[in-house]
Length: 134
Length: 136
Image: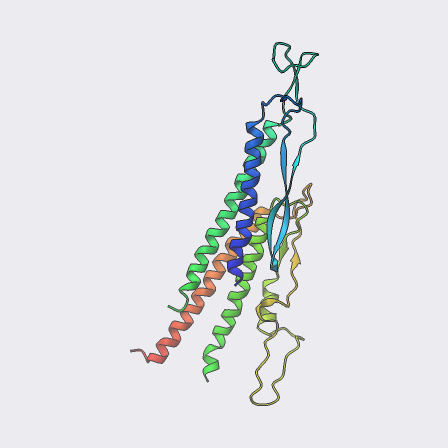
């Protein structure tokens, strides 16, 4: 039944996209985090997708292979009055780029919606197939 | 006699199986729209249907030399047809060749044709039932 595989394929994509959305949410939430006691500010995280074969060759799902950390140095702002300022008066914020994250969020949301629609169409077709011959 | 009644049903059944395979293929392409390096696949539906119903010129056909031998069906379900690679209209930086607009259009087109095949089958069944009942 190749139609039933569609639910596995689209389901894996929906789950991967929601994980991406989750990572975007934590990045945006930490956009203004300053360096903690260890001197390390929050590093933005990015998911990497990978194709995952589901039985047949023509059924290719998706999975999140790795969640990598962005290694660019954090934003440094001169603010000597800030309690977390270092000896030179600089405060290190996280390296999250809010604009990039918003774009990422819209892309994830659109892909999520696409896959949900794929599942809805497959469901409607399957229900009609069940009534075949009546 | 009876197999003539079901001949058209066989054809539509093969078409339905191929349509559902193509639907799965397009769903895989849509699912992998954001996967780096993924290459979109596509199938030649006419070719696959010809192969599945054994009408391909030069296709090996199994002879049934003795009565009682079962006729062979060539590559049922289009398994023999190789999948093709879609040519990207625009290249992308991560070497992903899924064209979302095309995939969405193909998906809708295939869904409508799947439903059309279903209706053909239903019509066929209804016609046969009418003939069996003799119009009563």
